[in-house]
Image 1: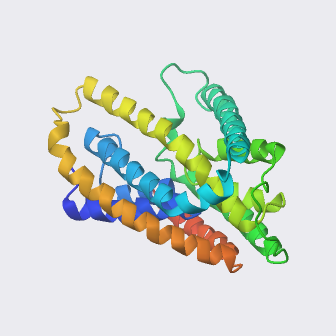
Image 2: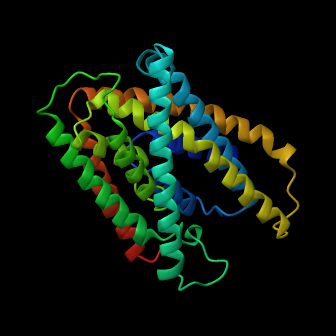
Length: 290
């Protein structure tokens, strides 16, 4: 079933806000899709999620561009050093994701051909546990950071720290409910990175990994169409997709302003409390057999 315009707007607002807040967009979108009785594997939904991801990526670039230019690209030497640390973090992410994908395929699916981590997408039990774990991490990092008021510096994220933060990102990506921004920003703060620098670096990594995620979604769309899941005309989906993209962009900008304000004023741990409440809600849905 194709989503209605109202459903598209609601999903765009949820995706746009939750993608950038440390509360896991995938967890919220999965629950929303189930409540709306939408099939996340349908070509229409895959295409819509591609457009929503694109909207949030543009929001991140628009919001951080000025501060990135000042912190990362004041001159050629600084630009090279910044790009190198981002590359190190991204490589670390790729290694961890690869290891986890292989481990999940072998341990969870016992080596079954064709099985992948995407098969776990709608498993509410995993989402529940993931939200609980990231909620604890956010609370611990938030409460500890309140005692530190260090000012951010361009070199606040060293190469070893970049590798560690990238590894945390790699752990978060395969599991729905483990917030990427929540995990990376919290880990950064626990490792001694100032709040603003942690936020800027986390979302710089997000811009790097979003295109591959979008490309993977396009591949899922191609496979879905090749398997004969209806005669889907992408041109007909362009209008609703652009509408969703616009709303996810606006929701993303609002979410980033909210995140920055709470982070800078020592309220980061409140996001962790929300994740614990959301975990309880998802757990209740899972136990009810929803």
